[in-house]
Amino acid sequence: MKILIATEKPFSKQATDGIAAIAREAGYECALLEKYTSVDELKTAVADADALIVRSDKVTADVIAAAPKLKIVVRAGAGYDNLDLAACTARGIVAMNTPGQNSNAVAELAIAMMIFMARNQFTPGTGTEISGKRLGIHAYGNVGRIVARYGKALGMEVSAYDPFITDPTIFANDGVKMASSVAELYQNSDYLSLHIPATAETKGSIGYDLLMSMPKGATLVNTARKEVIDEAGLAKALEERTDLKYITDILPDTAAELTEKFGKRFFTTPKKMGAETAEANVNAGLAAARQIVSFLKDGVTKFQVNK
Image (cartoon, rainbow, N blue to C red; front, side, top):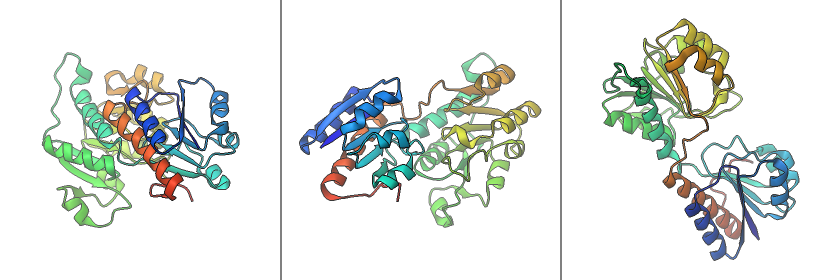
């Protein structure tokens, strides 16, 4: 069987070498497609693949149609909205992610972004400290929990909201206050760290009303997905509230306009870098390879994300 690593934004050499070693040990072939520039290249490469490992690469219905032998696709990372789950399910292809492998890298970036904005993007002028400030965490999963731990270590008062966690002891055991609603969380957060996935319910859900409800001088930090932001509502709030700030790891569609209008109150990384550490790169890649081998050999579907 053949495992294809297809990454427009490549893994590190250590990660690809590790994936190849895991494949060889299991008796499988490993092929590599890096820095490709068209979907046709991906479709050609996947034509004889039994398994596929990707990062943020889009695995669409067209890509799946071009892969008649494909049995499993693994997204090396937590989010999986770049996989067409319906198309995978229709073909009987198992889709997986690698939860937790990039979490520390993303959490560290979120904290770094808070400090970056508090210190005027490291330009001259008087900044502020994040110690003593209120940190809100929207979605308390793998990344959110680590952000909470780091925030507490820096002297922040931490609260969180997650609609899927109803047991208050989970928050209490971490020394985190449980917010009763999204509205309450935003109203009481000087820094809001956003970790919600992009779903039908969340897309465009963070906009004008929530931002306007935040305290004076508040900063919204987005290391999740750009689709959850209502960019028109964001721009309107930033225009009306000259004290608000927004920093994101996902390039907005209106990035140029936001930069021109709001200067140091807005910042975006040019390309998503939450998982761009050597450690996360290796962890996610090797986890993906091990999950593929476990599935192909023993039918293990622990991290399956489709039906």
